[in-house]
Image 1: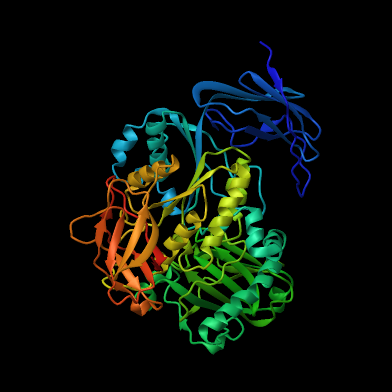
Image 2: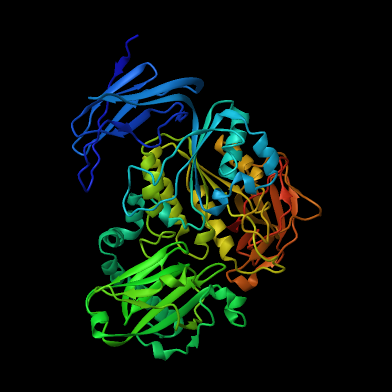
Length: 638
């Protein structure tokens, strides 16, 4: 049977460098055996070939032809298909004949699961892992994990091989638990193939996941140019970024400038070359979070100081800003990243030289944590000056985390999206599940970043892609009285961004977290709630707070049945506030149908808050049972 030919669409994509000749045409890296194609969406298949080469792509019994552009890129489109588990075959052929063949593709719903460690959290580390894993046999639930990588520009390839896999006890243990449990429940609800693309990175902020367009819209051309400069001129980029870091530190420390005036602060001898939380008897042993200055004075001969030099620091936990004789030479995030900084000619001098490092740690270990034998200055003439000892330290009073560079691996502009999302190409999706925010707590502008994230991913995956957001779980010490909470502010930013979007949904985890573990194990319930939101099931959401006759009535949408307070007469976690934080007070109200009524006889409150704490305790549920998300609402008059 001859394949039926349909109209092809050629998409020319700009590139900054020539594409080398290819031996045979290839498809985008997301395509492979067992891939799941999004149902009811136009199918876009992209690939690479020799410039000008004629290519034929065949999906089942339908073929499309295209001619590769000058950059070697081609794209074809196929009509939408209904959901089906009937196996399909996909081939691409060119001047050398059939180049690639993929088998057992199916059509269903495809979801991208992204975020930080709570999305990355594997099935094997969650609740009931043994039973869940050993019962996992489902060829209709397919998974692919994108390897971790970063880039200053959008790529058309991943940082390693990817492969779609059916769910089995062998493939499931290391996959995202939240993503799997969402997909598992969608399979139960819909009975069609479900594909899940997992691309997350523990500790990542939201900014690395922005598309290039989103990054440019929020941060401007100058920041994007600085990001690209780092790839070709890291020393120049660091020098350009350093004044921002230095201005921040002067402001936070009351004018201190240790990089330029190291004798302006007090120094102590480093007790041992190890992570600083192992320094027994020092404040860092019990409180390792913050910024610590490290200093090494180096005596050099004229020959050693001459020409370009390399400063090797090994691994540093977490973030360093490094100067040599007051000249900025390096800024890197990541405890697994070796630091080898180029020192331009003219920076070093015969005699005394100063290496100054500001190391900022946000969790656990801190400082120089790698092989100390790597610490050295290597001169252009090959001489090596060891730096394994002789270090001094000074604990900074500044506790805030410093500004992050555009190339920062965990917080840079679009660096993860460029390497982990862009290569997916225009692969149609049903939706995105986003579980991230812990690394953005205390950083302004999350609403804008989330909106830009939505917009950028919809441009790539389709304008009707549904966005699902997990509101952060409860974590931290109990809160016996109302207080300010940066985590609560982040949750409210998540809610605001979703409320402003007509095709987004918020699911909350404020009642299923663990106050002593930022990675709660109950991912099954998070997945179940995401699945409900994915299919459009209404979830409890605050709608209004209205003053009426000495009371404030808070009304909710999406309530199933009626609201009820568990284990008590009154719903917990409600606060009435005036304009200042000091006016906030807990209020014992009552649940009535889809509302909670709060007494306010004085009528002074202007805001209602619910679950406004790092680790709130809540007991308000509808009949499913689901609790409303944490929120803050202004009080209006009837």
